[in-house]
Image (cartoon, rainbow, N blue to C red; front, side, top):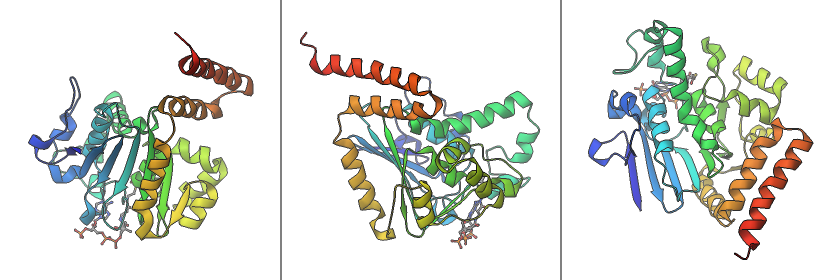
Length: 284
Ligand code: ACO
């Protein structure tokens, strides 16, 4: 098993590849990052690893996530995102709302003093930690137990699929704190549950449990907490049984489908199938 640890001893840091930007990560103490990534064959497991702080996330966490996406080995086909301890993630580290902030990182107070372009760049870098999970070449699965609040909910939404424990508590709390959900969560949420339900969930910050999450399509399956790991591994194995090129092309089609007309989608299906037929059946 090849292991890539993010946030630990720099000697055990993953190969970053040329040009990867680790500046935001390295400015923060390892304990503030609280993230590790293990690659085993075609499966990468990204673990939020600050259970004593309910896997609260900081800018350093998001930069480290982006770096994992940047340096993911090509052979990886399934990425599992999980959280250590009783909660998947209690969301953004609440110290970011204090004037002192998180040591070595921007707080909201210091970020507010940035110019508009710099502030947007800071948010874009945070979003980069989430966006790669939708790449067609991989299928990402969030394995979610306990609280998935704010940034935790958005991280689960950034994944293609969600397997949840029966104690899951999804909550989009940003508006209650005066913010908007900006870690790429509003689109998948609205796409999955519809705009009216998304408005209701976000603006009331209510908790969505396992049964409702499955009913709304926010989770593919809910299982007893003790079965979360095995169910996720079984799903990963089933996904890996499908031809990689066909899986990539199919995910690319499905991801693009909501934004296309029927005619556009039919044309996209033809283009993908031409490539598949040629790859599978061309004699020379
Ligand atoms: N940021 C920083 N520390 C946190 C956070 C957080 N978001 N959530 C929990 N912790 C810390 C607690 O301060 C506590 O630390 P301590 O042991 O040093 O006192 C430890 O984690 C355990 O927290 P408890 O509250 O004791 O754990 P419990 O299991 O009872 O409750 C819960 C968990 C419900 C998640 C609660 O901690 C909570 O409400 N956290 C804040 C959630 C929140 O508002 N997040 C922001 C969402 S908005 C966004 O993400 C942009």
